[in-house]
Amino acid sequence: MERALPTIRIEDTDFIVDVNKMELRQKGNEQNTIPVSDMRDIGTGYVFEYDLQEKNIPSVWSNNETTTVRIANMVELDPARMAEKHRMTLDEIKGKDDFDVMVDQQAFDMRVNKGMLPTVDIAGHTFYVDLRMDMLRPKDDFLSRGIVFSDIENYFDDTTGTYTIPYDPKTKEFSEIDYESITKIPKDLIVVSFPSELKMDAIGWNRLHGYDLKDGLKELGVQMNFKAKPASWEDIYVPQKIKENLEQIQKEKAEKKNIVKPQDKPKQKGRKM
Image (cartoon, rainbow, N blue to C red):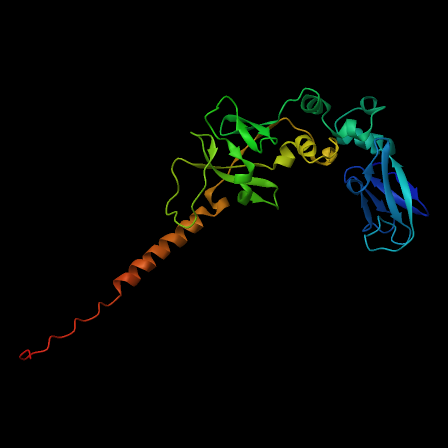
C-alpha cells in the first residue's frame, strides 16, 4: 500500500507536501499550490509571505493581511520520498539539507572550489563553456574563433531553452546563414543543438550577474559535461527559405522575359527640309 503524503499546517489550513513536484498543495483544494521554487531558501528550510485570505503567496497588488511562514527542508518533511527520488538511502540523506541532496556535490566542488569549466562536446570536439568570455571556447584550437553567444542570439529557442545553429566542423565555429540569398544546403556545415549558457553553467551565470552562487541550482542542477545533439536544417527553416528564394528567382526571370521591348519609332519618309 502506497504511503500517504505528509501534510503540514499553515495557520488554519492543511497542505500536502509533494516532494516529487516540489510543492505544497492545499488539502481539499488541490488547485491551490505553493511551489518551493517561489519560496526563499535559507539553508535550514524555506521562508515565504503567506496571504491569509488567498492561502498562498500574495500577488504584488494584494492588500490582504499576510504573515511570514517558515517550513523545514523537504528532507525533513518527507525523508523517505526524498531518498527514493534521489536514489539515496535514508542513512545517506541523514543530516543533509535539500541542497546537499538535490545538487551534485562533486560537480559543485569541481566548479566552485577547483574552478573547472563545464564542457560541451560538439560533433566530437570539446568546447569549454566560458561565460566570462561570452563563448564556447574550443579546446586545444587557438586559431578557431569558437562560438560566441552574442553571435547566436537569433538561434535561441525560448520554449526549449536551447540553441540550434549551423556549425562548421572544420573551423569549429558558428557559420551564419544568409537567409535572403541561400539556394542550396551548405555541404560543409551541419546543424547542432545545445542548452543555454544558464543551463550549462548556472554557477558561472550567477557569478557573472552578481547572484548567490547557489541560486537556482536545485532547479537547474550542476553538470560538468554536455553533448550537443544533431539537428536538422528544417529546425532552422533553411529548406523552407531555399524554396522561397528559388521561387522568387523563377518569378523574377519570368517577369524579365515578359517585359515587352518598346517599339522603335517609325522613320518619317520624305525629303529633309
